[in-house]
Image 1 (cartoon, helix red, strand yellow):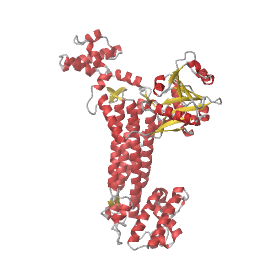
Image 2: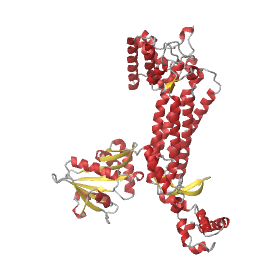
Image 3: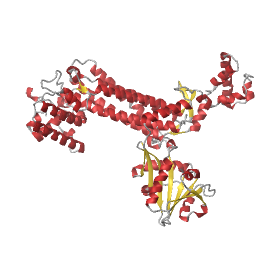
Image 4: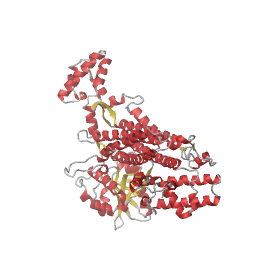
Length: 624
């Protein structure tokens, strides 16, 4: 059904209809169109167009239609309607008859679509801001957990000066903070209501546009009808913010692709964000990051496309503006997905600190410190610079870092070099010497981390019983710590069968710790497979899991909890008491056959007493 057929004697050709109709993509705006229509029905009722009874019927029909759409009871795209506005009016007419035909009084599709698009964009901005904040929180956790680790910084893709890995994380938090602030600013300019501006010149009905704007959550009404119906600056701002943020995400991806390469080996990406090769079984490809980097093009293209569309448009509305939606819808979807994917990548990162430190030492970044040292001994800077360069050449020939050279080797170049040179050649000295605001020293880095934690809020964590959907994360944790010989390996089918035994800790939607309470048929029980992701250690998550399982054990009327662990000090802090391993129940000791250290056991046994009502024992074989 077209809303404009009265003036025409013949219908549209099938080709034109397919070319002209926007319902295949603007159906996304259906809830916003319904929301705006409810607001408009109230406005024209106050203006005397509708009776109160008619308005109430319209509002209820619109609410019912909204529910049907939300529940998936209606297939909008199967309709032959021209656009979402036509579809909503047709559905209302089928229910209410002529009352529905009054709804469009004083309103044009020009101000209607402009309003719908602003309402939709406003909702999406809130979703995107939340996604940006989540990525920042995950980077902040990564920074906090790795602030003592050092890697080489780069200029021109050449090793330059050592930096803290946390400093690298904080650099991207800065970028994402700016991205978020752009959306906050955009939201302020976007939040003006065009509704009531009509086709281009306003409406003759006495509509209280400010009250209407407030009812729809807008800050105010647009004050110029020509501009209101044709303005798409807010779309451009979203597309620009998206393009800038996707550029940041692409740089982030590029850094991590290099860091994860065999040549650098600074980080290891989790299996959940990588894929393999159909030909080369050894490959582990950073596909998530490459796709983030690759999706920039389509976002940039949407911005350029709309700029070109708008540059030659006269006032006011032109059908060219129909081209504003598909690029915007896809951009928002791709940007949001990339932000979610970036967060999952961050959660999967494990830092290879030894490789980072080795690479930082091999960069000869301490040559500048050596020159400064000589200056402090009275050597002119230019001379000191030359001596330091000669030392670098010598160290390169020896294939040794400067700090590994013997004193007599260094004194070949200047007798002023003494034993006191070695402390200043250490990586930590180089890094922490840059201790001013914005520097990579431990003090400014720690201070900024604390400020961001305050600004972003510490991530809440949830201790809960495991679900089958947690299996992949649990398997990764179990395999990792089994590889470190800190707990026992568990087959996937065993984990599936025992999923109800597990508890997990979830942070920002990611499982970062797990442990299982397994009860044997004899009444003995075991808490096993306790492991915390390396990126989340030091947060109290191990204690939280043990407390959770102790509470579960108490609810089951268990009596005594036994710990067999290589981390006795951890459990001692939680109230466990040392016990003799020889007293361990045979049922628990069956797992010793799986242990790689069975012939040279270095574990300690501890006990925790819950109550004296039940003699059932619970053993805890694990690592904190």
